[in-house]
Length: 238
Figure 1 (cartoon, rainbow, N blue to C red):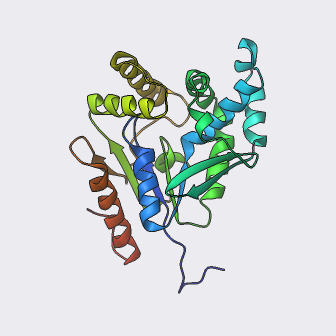
Figure 2 (figure 1 turned 90 degrees about the vertical axis):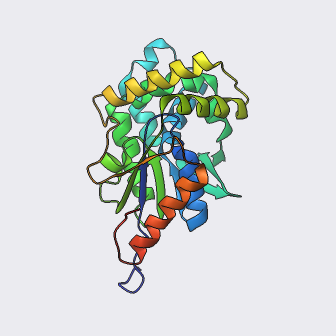
């Protein structure tokens, strides 16, 4: 039981556009602070992966009720292991499969379904209920963890984000060209910022960090400094 002498650790919400480095930074912050890292985007990929594996056809992808039921019933959990975040589906580590090309093609469509978002937002809130969570995504500060004492909006210039996506794809064994990565980043920006349900936007009390000219370590250090200020009773300022 939490007491005044042992308050829960503050949650950290990290939002930003595709390729801004949210997940990598969030994972490193969690590792440094001994927090739990929750990659919210992994949940949408998880629902998409299972739909792909169940052989959804064109009509199935348009059946929003079926996708919502899948999102509600799917058992999704997160495990920190050797500085990495592993995503478990029905108790099985499926982290690597979430970056499959078939998942990439459909995940934006799945994430745009309001009922899917509501179901997964509830799961995300439950995971953060005890505090001590670093959660990254596109609607964490504005929708999921609106009461998080530290909200960071992480961004970077588009060419930098495209390069990061190129490196990510190469490391995952699915290399793409610069033009392909650029089209992907720009298309995702449009989808995320214009969708009707929980669009990507800056929370009023979020602190913006532009990582265009910052190293990953610099960004992580800034966020950890802000968390330390919070835990000392101050404000989350740089």
